[in-house]
Image 1: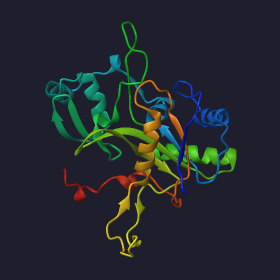
Image 2: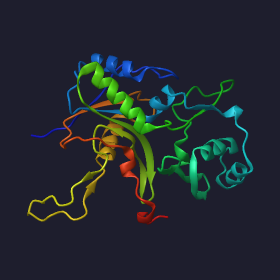
Image 3: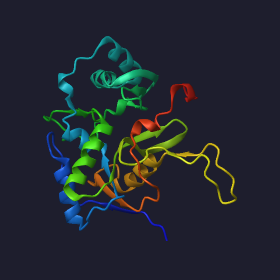
Length: 256
C-alpha cells in the first residue's frame, strides 16, 4: 500500500548566523539512521534558514518612520517592529487592532511580512530583543541545499522551506511552502481522469504546501525543537519547481 513516512531528524542544534545547514542535515540524517534516496524530500523550518543567513534585527537599533508610527497607533504594535515589517513589505493590505496583513516583497500575502519574535532568541530583562525576517531568497536557499545534498549523497531530493501562515477564510495557522526546489510546488491535474473517467477541469494541487503542512504537524510550533523533517513516499513525479508557482496572480485574487 502507498505510504508517506515523516521523520524528524534528531539532535539538531540551535542554529546561529553562519551555521552550515548542509552539515547539520547530514549529521541529523546519520543520527536518524537514514540514507537519502532519490525522491525523498527534506522540509526545513523557516527560522533555521533565516538564522543561518543572519536575517536578525536588533530591535534596539530600529528607528521607526512616520508611517510605522501611524500603523502602530492602529495595530497597537511596537512601531519599531512595524518598521522592520515595512522594510520587507511591497504593499500594506489590511490594518486593524493587532493585525497587519501585507504583501511581502517576494509576493506572499501574510501577517507582518513573516517577521517574528518567537523562537528567535532569549527573552527577558537585560537581553537584546531580536526580530527574524524571512530568508532573502527562499527558492535559492532550497536550490543550494538540494545541490549540496546531491553532491554529498548522490541522491536527487526535493527541498522545501516551511513557514506558518494564517488564512483569510479559516482559523488557525498551517505550514506553507515559501521555498521549493526539486519538486512541483503546484501540481496540475487538469485533464487527468477521475475514478469514472471524467477529465478533471480545474484541479491544481498545492503539493509543496501539502507536504509543508504535513511536516509542520511534526515540527510543532513551540519548544519541540524539530526543525528538519525527512519525507519518503511522495506519490507524484518530481520536476524542477519553485514556491513562486503557488502565488495567486493578482487578477485572480478575490480578496484584493
